[in-house]
Amino acid sequence: MLMRYEIQLQTMTKAMVDTVLPAVDPLNALAQEQCRLVIGTLMLMAEQLPLQYRFDCDELTRMVAFADELGAALEDCTGTVADASSALTASAVAGRELLSRPTADPTDLVTVARAIRTALDHVIDAVFTDDCARAYRADVHRVVLDHSRGEILRDRVWTRSQGFEPDAEELPTIESLLLPLTSGLVTK
Image (tube, rainbow, N blue to C red):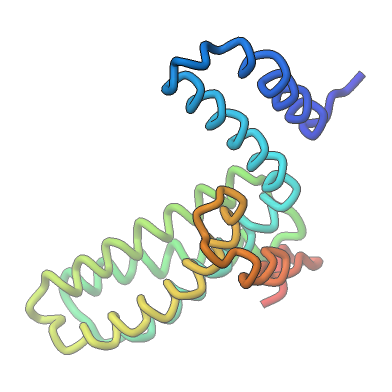
């Protein structure tokens, strides 16, 4: 019999709630807290796993768009910024290629998104440390803030069930924020 992750997570959560937590010394606040943390994490995993692939495709799509917009803002740069921008362009090309496939390995999605994020960090660092790039800083600042707004909202919604959002019911659903999967990985 194949035990799917849904059943495994339900079983682990039930064991923690019904057996482990009641057996932990009620006077040991740290142990009680850690048991509740494990239970909460298992419940969050059960909630997120069905959408994880879509979430990762969406993240990679956003990273490619971010890289493209930042690259366009720095088209005329030279020196260290141009070098960092070339690496960013190459990582965005890899991301676009992966997204154009009908399917992709989930590990590849995360790896390529992280590579783009690293390249973005290097470009932004170069712009704000290279005096020759001073003229580009306002545009880079705008692009970073524009992209971070969407990413922050998506991440807040993704982790809403952890209970840190004071008005969680006013946030949109995660499904409404994720791009739909198509014959390529996503619709842009």
